[in-house]
Length: 158
Image 1 (cartoon, helix red, strand yellow):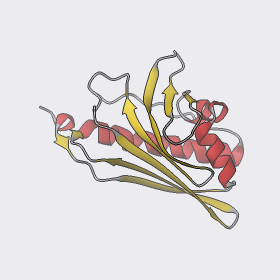
Image 2: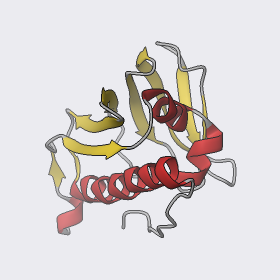
Image 3: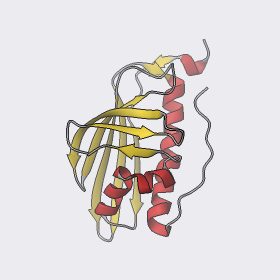
């Protein structure tokens, strides 16, 4: 077994970024495909974003990347969803909880993304998630502030 296969209960992954925009624009960017396909590796989203509704993140080829349930939908302040990676055969079967807290701070928005998992998962998924979230949230910030997302090439966890 290599280090990446080691099973761990990971600490929460938390990213905080400040974006020169409005809470509504951050909410729209997280919940509308016109935005997500620009900053989330070409993925689109599907949901009505109501509490209890299903949601999914769809790859450009039509396959489901991630699916889950909307746990909290308090627009434009908070979005919380369960997160199941569907396209990797060895992805964790227990849910991860992703929470986006959107707070106005003067003319800025403080976006806090928290990834929480109670179950043991392979270390490689924690490391891949940390790298992926950094790229996704940086690109989201760039898109909302400049109108252009970042182009960041990433490989799936090995």
